[in-house]
Length: 286
Image 1 (cartoon, rainbow, N blue to C red):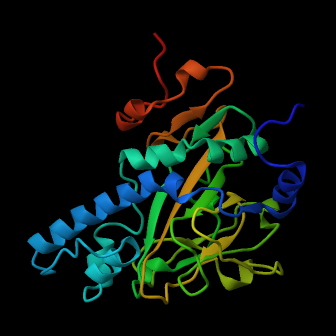
Image 2: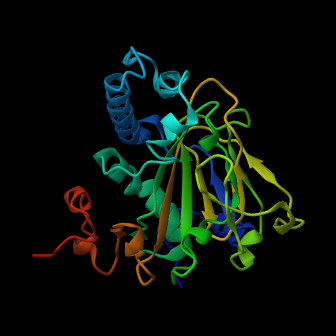
């Protein structure tokens, strides 16, 4: 079968063997800017609400992007933060622009072909210092959709600031994508309700820490065991996890509205920004 997409044969083979692949600095700062602006818009909304509730006295509008959210919550509690969710899934145009970016779609196409559906489970993750929700326990993404027929769903994890071991970069267990979905439990310590695995389920696979520069992409299979550590820095570790699958698999409407991101067969049906804002999965051809 003719190869398509942007990955080399060696990169694709590494992904198939190890269950993950790192693409260093896939996106430029200009590529990230629309998503960054969307995050800043969300932070401004939160600042307005915190001010109205009397929880802060200053919206810190002139603080830098990596600092502002951390400083807004510096003297507040985990519960104050979790009112806004452990991750965000707002329909702000900048997120669609990132999810539709050709560099991302080209990489994913190399692994699952040119008929690409953007899964509804995309997340914006602000890992805030000293907030318990920042630490994500060992888990498999597929534990969140165990009954879905989609296999695999490819996660594309992208930091908007450098992800380091200090601020809580991704950690992964290579080759664990070959096993079934493991029995999981709900994490109860932080109040987040993450799905979690117990230590004895992790097996002998080594743990690989993946510190990467802003704009890098880490692609991994939805059965690959992974986690991230707490943020021990003073700034926010901003990241997104986007998900893609072939169009012939379960679109998982119970999790929201995904969209047709690319199609060689039906290019006229690829969703536009307007379609996405209206939660339409594809464009209606005239």
